[in-house]
Image (cartoon, rainbow over all chains, first blue to last red; front, side, top):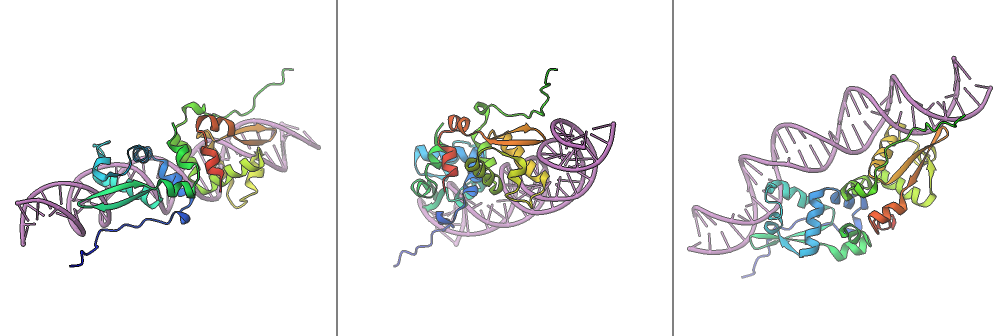
Amino acid sequence: MSRERSPRLMEHPDLEQVELPTVLFALSDASRLALVRELAVEGPRTVEACRETDPDVPKSTFSHHLRTLREAGLIRNEPAGRHRVVTLRRDELEGRFPGLLDAVLRD
Amino acid sequence: MSRERSPRLMEHPDLEQVELPTVLFALSDASRLALVRELAVEGPRTVEACRETDPDVPKSTFSHHLRTLREAGLIRNEPAGRHRVVTLRRDELEGRFPGLLDAVLRD
DNA sequence: GCAACTATTCCACTGGAGTCGAACAGATGT
DNA sequence: ACATCTGTTCGACTCCAGTGGAATAGTTGC
C-alpha cells in the first residue's frame, strides 16, 4: 500500500518574495524574538517543547505567533507524528538578508 | 545679550536603554525604512527635504513617523532656524546593535 | 508687532494585531 | 472504532498604530 502522504502541509513563502519590513515586523515582538533566539540556540524543536519556555501563554496565542513567523519566512512548521517541528530558516535567511539574523541574535 | 538657547528640544533616548524590538518595530514600516535609507545615503536633511521624497504624505503623518523613529533611537531631530534637521544615529546604533543597520540598509 | 513659514501636537477615526476560550483536525495507541 | 494527545483555526474582544485635518508653537523678515 502506498503510504499516503497526507501530512498537514502549511504555506511556507519563498524567501525571495518576502519583504524586509515583514521580517522586521515579525521580529519586533518580544515573545517572537525570544522564540527565534531559542530556535537558533537549541535547533529544531517541537511546538510542545517551544511552549515549555513560557507555559502560561495559551496554545492559540502561541500558534498565532508561529503563524506570523512562518508567513514572514523566519521558521518552518512541519508535521512530525502527532507533533509539529519548528525550524529556523537560518541559511535561507542569510542568503536573502545577509547579516540580519546574526545582528538580531547578537546580544 | 546672552544668545538665549531656547531651541525646541525633543526627547532623544539613550541608546543603551532602547530595546531591540522597539528598533525593529520602527523599521518594520516601509515608509520609515525608506526614510532611514535616504538619511543613510544623503546624510542629515531638513524635514522639508525629507518630505520631498513623498510629497503626498500629509505633514502630520510624516511627523508621526519621525516621532516613532526618534523614540526608537534611530534618528535625531533638532532645530535649525525655522527648519529642523533629521540625522541618522549611525555610529551610536552600530555600538548598540552591531551589524543591524548595515543589514537593514543592504539591498 | 505682525504676517509668512516650518513643523509638531491634538483630536477623532479606522483597520489591524495581540489575546484567548472553544471548536475543530490530524495522528497515535489500544 | 474510540479515546487521547498535539496543535491549528474560528470567533469575539480589546488595544494600539497609521492616517489626516485643524489647531498650535517656534523662527524669520519686514
